[in-house]
Length: 234
Image (tube, rainbow, N blue to C red; front, side, top):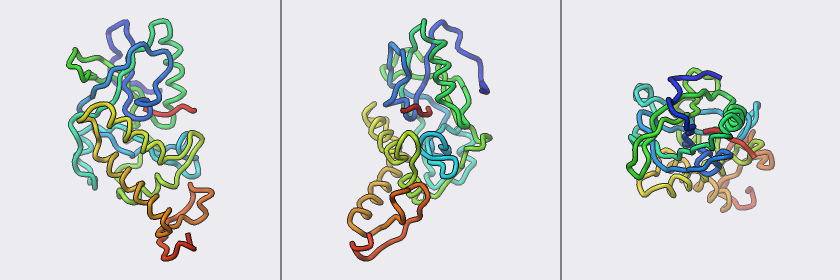
């Protein structure tokens, strides 16, 4: 697994979670600290073949994109907060090797190791943290996508770890619980679109063909109600 940047010069081992690690922490941690990193943008631009999708029908999960690179792209979500909120976990000293092995297994499928300063929400000194990122040069990186098409893709995708939309909605909830300012408009907009899809499906305004196998189906509008762990990344 590739490593970007120097490891922290400290006996403590910290990892930053910006996706499922926020609500599904790694094992053997003794401190959980909410806060943020800067210089990145969080996007649902990483394909998931192993957790929220399959190799044949990959789902979508979050990764971090360097802000300078993101600014060069045509993203329909054309703004992003300066702070990428998440949680940092300190791993017990006698469990560091075990957790590193666990995370190397958990964070496969295009993610690589990086180190970045993490800023605790309580204003205390920054912490050097390890973070897993799916960089643009990995073969699971999708790049910008139309938000509605992305929401529809998330809605129908499913993998060994469950429904892709559950990942999205759990991330929205976890972010909202960190701080009054920790929401992410990209995540919220996709969540709103997924909720609208679900509302229309329940009311018979939208049907997903063959919904019993949701990862492989397209949406179509209908006019009648009669037509009607796990271990993850970041």
